[in-house]
Image 1 (spheres, rainbow, N blue to C red):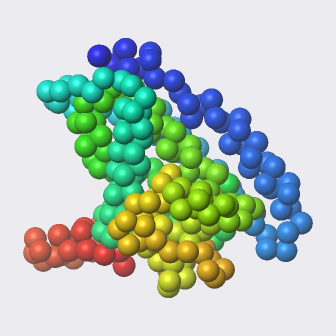
Image 2 (image 1 turned 60 degrees about the vertical axis):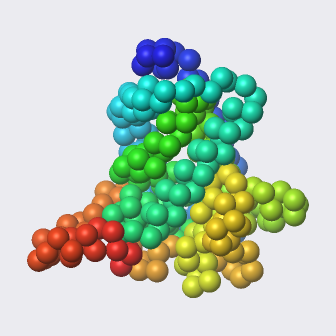
Length: 275
């Protein structure tokens, strides 16, 4: 398989889903426009739109590079897994686990937190919050190398990646309450993700799953929604500017690195916990 074949065979699912995504935002806004909780706040909403627009532009610029990386590691693998129904399930589980791992590390180490903090910067939770994908999030692609080395067709891997990404849109809302217990046990739901976005002490660093909540249950990072979440960062942001929201932690890291006096200090600044 070469780059041209991959681009030809891979369906742009995220583009196909765009009308549903934007339509859902409009419907949610319409339904909550008179809500006393003001789930949509004007400056916050336009920050989300600005961040999302920048993220789409960066995705378009880097698309060929991402495909090239996927093919590079795929061709390094000496074996191949034939594409069958179970291969799709395996690929999806693998992608979802890589997402879980990347997400968990992004909350534990400062340099990775800088690639993710943008997503947690809003003090509201609505469908537009899902647009807040960091402009430096592609650095976390290193965590998906195991999926590319699996020997599974890159079209399958990247399709599953798109589906996993799209799944995460609908869980950014307060309009959907708790779902049937069997669904809540296996899959990430809006209730689970409200916990993840909460800055409450009991909610910090919980529910990292993208589609499957079973990773959190297995690794001890699960938390039930049992009190009203307070959204946003523990250290509130100082601006609604999309550029600031994407780079303020990077700027802080840069300032600290300039003061570092040893390799150990540099390592601790980069890979110590977020401050």
